[in-house]
Amino acid sequence: MKKPTTLKFDDVNYPQHYNEGGIEAIEAIQASMSPLEFKGYLKGNVLKYVWRYTYKDKPIEDLNKAKWYLEKLIGCHENII
Image (cartoon, rainbow, N blue to C red):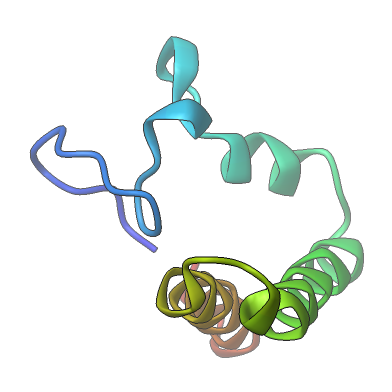
């Protein structure tokens, strides 16, 4: 997912706590893994957020996070990330 052109943070697409020091956490994680490992990481996060969305106070937020990771995983397979 592309970074927004403005620095407007939101809890799903561009969380401030994952963007410290000019490095986005997802990019550092991806750089530390092989493509196959990174796809597994993304899949695990999709499953995590779908699994727990009914147990927390923000189900829509967790489903949107699952969607974000799923879109990133789809992008890996389409070679667009």
